[in-house]
Length: 357
Image (cartoon, rainbow, N blue to C red):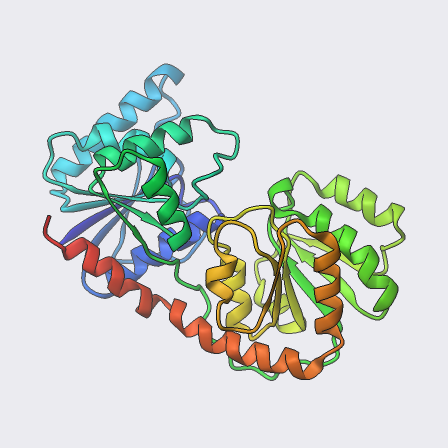
């Protein structure tokens, strides 16, 4: 079977692109012929791509702005025909504005892979329209959680099959000698409002009063850096909070931490939680939509009411004060991370691809 995966840009370092590349590699490794097409910029992949995978860039920025979308649809349809594609997986619903018209009348199994929470559009209203079109005109829509699957079932006039398949973890369960007494809480993500680092810092003001020897490390970069830096300075946290920016080796920070914290206002499927589980970190997380409740189920990690800063601070302090609990929760989390390994997830994709309509 020949599979075309359409993604925004393989040059990007985003989480959506990361799992798209993981899926492409996993399908290639089990014998599928895979083409990975970027809407734009597909010449310098940020993540590793198997050498058997063919890379294609669709959008030409030399085209007049008004012609870019129709020309990209034309190139995509031509690619589908010339390569005799059996199945197309479009990564992120917004990209289906290209794939839906390109597949009209073609014998191609069309799968839309949603990566965001159905209840949020990140300020792009056309995303809501794209979701309704995908639910009606794609053969299947894949969500990342059962909760989001239900949102799609309730919120669309769907003709598509709607099913949930979790993302694969980019790290295997880690076997390393864990450093103790680092007294470090780790958070990872873009410095944007959705990730809630402003709330985490408010909680840390309370935490540092009781646990002055602990430090907070936030890995990531974004437009809220100045705002967060100002808060850190105004609340005299410069010795207790470190904004390290981007890194090419996030594993270093997971290994040095004792606790992981997720403070997001909402999520699609937080990959950082999978990573934290793989590194055996106990987790404190807001119970936001969608992902944390399903990912952390059965691990003993702590869910607190979404956006409740006092609860977040209290849960962190509780875990900081209990070394034995941290150890037990970490071991349970590492065991749970086995569920999210690529070899476990790929079987669900194969079943979907091979299923006859």
